[in-house]
Amino acid sequence: LDAWHEIGRARDNIEAHTGGTPAYDSAQYVRLFRAQRNTYMAGSCIFLMLVLYRFTSLVGDLLALEARAAAVTKQGKNN
Image (cartoon, rainbow, N blue to C red; front, side, top):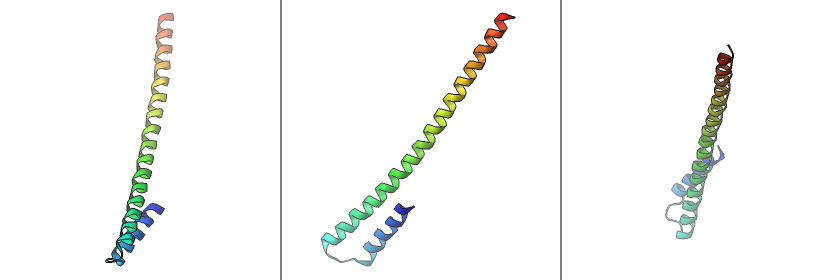
């Protein structure tokens, strides 16, 4: 959430101070780039966290089903 605010502030500074010194302009673009980079990194991490959570839950379900299938097979052989 802070990253979105930082992007907005950087864009506002760029629009408000057009025609400034080249050093100031480039510093503002660097600030905007870093804010955007942090936003994409945070979004990617959240997405990967959800993918990993889903993957681990599917693996857990698979292991439970395999154990159940083995128990049913064993019970079928005993009868």
